[in-house]
Amino acid sequence: MDTVVVTGASRGVGEAVARLFADRGAHVVICARDQEHIAAVAEDIEAAGGSATAMRADVRDEFDVERLLETASREGEMTGVDCVVANAGVYHGRPGATPLAEESYAGFDDTLRINTRGVFTTVREAVPHLNEGARVVVPSGGIAREAKPGFGAYAVSKAAAEAVARQFAVELDAVVGVLDLGQVETELTNHAQGREPEDVAPMFWWAASEADADTVDGQVVDLRDWKKATR
Image 1 (cartoon, rainbow, N blue to C red):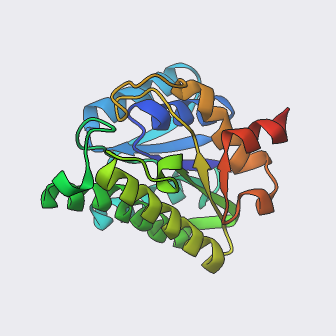
Image 2: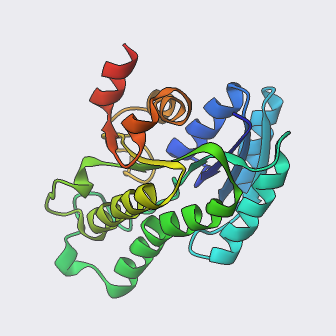
C-alpha cells in the first residue's frame, strides 16, 4: 500500500490510524482544520521513520478536499491513492446529553455538514484518484443503527454517513465499507470510558489491506467481526 489519506488526523482515531499506516510503510497524507496540530503529527511520524504529508483542510469545504486529494495522488512513490479513511467528525455538546428536540439549527447543520457531507465530499473528490483495488473506510458506531436518547444530530449524521458509504459501494469499483468501532475514548466522545484509539487502529489496516473485499464492501463491520476474522 503506497498512499493513504486520513481526514481528521490531528488527534484521536484519525491520528492513531495515520501513525499505524505509516509504521507499516504507507505514505500518509493527513489533514485537519488546525494546521499546527496536523503538522505536529506529521513531524512525529517522520521522526519515527515514517512518511507523511500534512495539509490544513476542512471537509466542509469541497475545494479544500479537492486540493487534498490532488496533492495525495502525487505524493507517494506511485501516483494515485490506495486507501481513504474518511474519519473527520464532530460532536457538539456532551454525548448522551444532546436530545434532537433541543438541537439548534446551526448545530444540526454543522454536524451533518462535517459528519455526513464531509464523508460524501471526501469520497467524491477521491474518485478520480483511486488506484485499482483502492479501498475507502468510514468509521461509525452502533448509534447509527440503534437509536438511543440524547445523541441527537450526531446519531442522525452517522446514520446518513453510513447510507452515503453504502451508495458509493454499489456505484464505484473501489471497495467502500463502514467500521463500527464501538465506544472509543477520545475528545470527540468527551473521553467517555472505552477502547483507546490505538486499540482500534489495526481494524482499519485489516479492512484496508487484509480483509476480503466482499467482507468490507457495502458492509458494516464491527469489532466482533474483526476479531473473529483475525483470531
